[in-house]
Every structure is written in C-alpha cells, then in structure tokens.
Length: 72
Image (cartoon, rainbow, N blue to C red; front, side):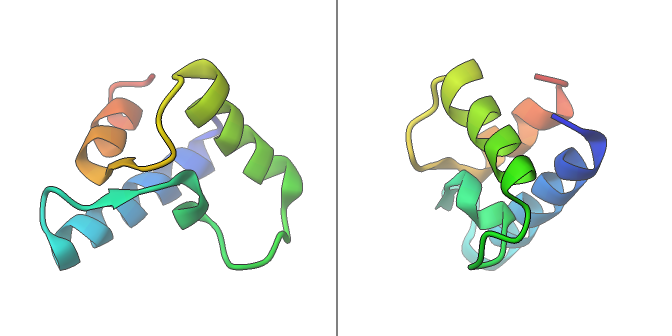
C-alpha cells in the first residue's frame, strides 16, 4: 500500500475512533469519497484488505490502524 493511502487510512481510522470509540468498525470504502474517482487506488486498498489480509468486510478501525502502522 502506497504511503499516501497509508496516511489517509490512519487519519480516517483515528477520526472514526475519536467520534465513536475504540470498537467502531469500518470497511476500506471509508477511505474514499462516494464516487469512484481513483479506481487504481481503490483497487490497491481492496487488494490489501481482501486479498492480502483476508479481512472481513467490516473490521475494527483500531485493528486496521495498528496493522497499517506496523507496516502490514
């Protein structure tokens, strides 16, 4: 996952956690606007989430943040 996507994902995870608490869940779609304006980046996130790590559609934001910070 490219660094810009990593930074954006961490920021979004932290925002969700701050608003809704440590148990809030999200999907990789949370990292994007409601339109498909960057399909290559969307597919990169989807591959990281689904193919590489075999995550469920919704995961805890804290788990995703920690995985990304760990360089996974």
